[in-house]
Image 1 (spheres, rainbow, N blue to C red):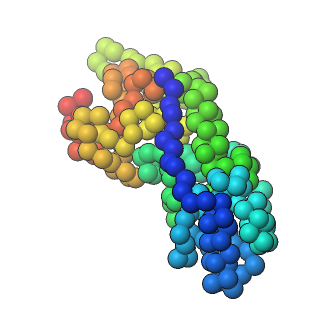
Image 2: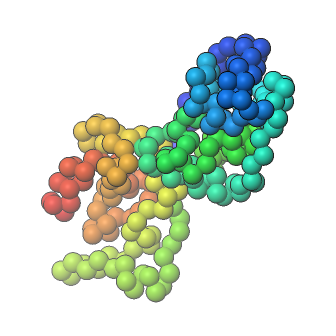
Length: 226
């Protein structure tokens, strides 16, 4: 199963976008603007719209006659790890406007710089997540000796770790969204529970097919009858 992204349409002409960049810069008394500077101001568009329209935020700044913004280079691994965390906290695909503190460690700017646009960054992230259909990381012999659930006359020896990796959590969220699979209620943040469909105590493995999103009440109720 592959996952797809949701896209939104841009609005405004190129000239209107550049004019608004200049207007905000003049209003703030600056010769350069970060995406956050612009989004926090009384703007007409969004930094996402501008960065997408011109390819990069700095290109838009240059065409508007403003100075480019200098930011430290952030590795692809750091950007993907941050996206994983934001996706899990939200329980759904992050939007451009979601990428700000305290939810996100990075603004969209390093994503635009690394991948060209925010959409291309999301596409690269989804390709990364989809490159492995399920968590194949096996536990070591030492861990295996610990991760054994003993029932009367039954011993389950697991091939995977009990807790899903952040990458596997994102895969589950891409499939289920931030909806409880049992009641359909929307859950976010700490209220998202990743449940083993076939319980871990009964030999269920930590794989994409055996995980589902549940709300806290249903996860607790399911745990009480296992």
